[in-house]
Image 1 (cartoon, rainbow, N blue to C red):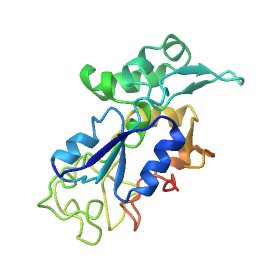
Image 2: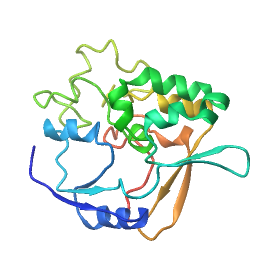
Image 3: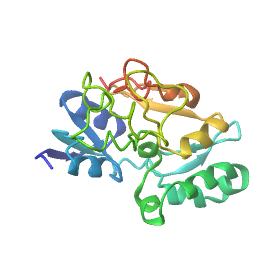
Image 4: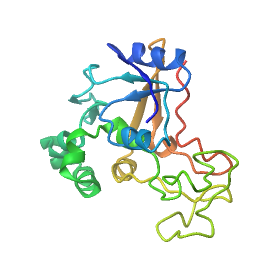
Length: 211
């Protein structure tokens, strides 16, 4: 793991501003995906912005009868919530099917939606991977690809998004809200949130860089 600097943000806008002013910075919440990638030096952030103090760990009713799920709500809390189990059972089932209890206790809603692919070639620094290093090629094409993309792939990348929770949220027509450094927000339908590899496999979502 490479050296990095660290800070704890107090507000969502402060967190976005901290990442915007530090090239190579990353948000840190539960860390269940990021820390593994840092150990393998697949992710090498120069600066980590800890967002665990932002009080985004609540599930609240909305005026239209839905639920607003905080970015830091753990997978365990979300799956066990009485309202989610009663009205959005597909979400509970998807979360419980997706990981071990230990991981669900730490993994967050936002982190789950932003997790990187589990493609074995992406995780192997000795293999070429356009998602990890643009222009290096895709070892998965022509390699062992039984669990990789059949549709929505390209000649640049055949990696798949690994999350079960996002699929359930797509069924439920969820909306993702992002925050910029100036405090303004943007609402993105979950159907438009994740990108297909196409010719830019490094871009996995349609959320814009914080600025």
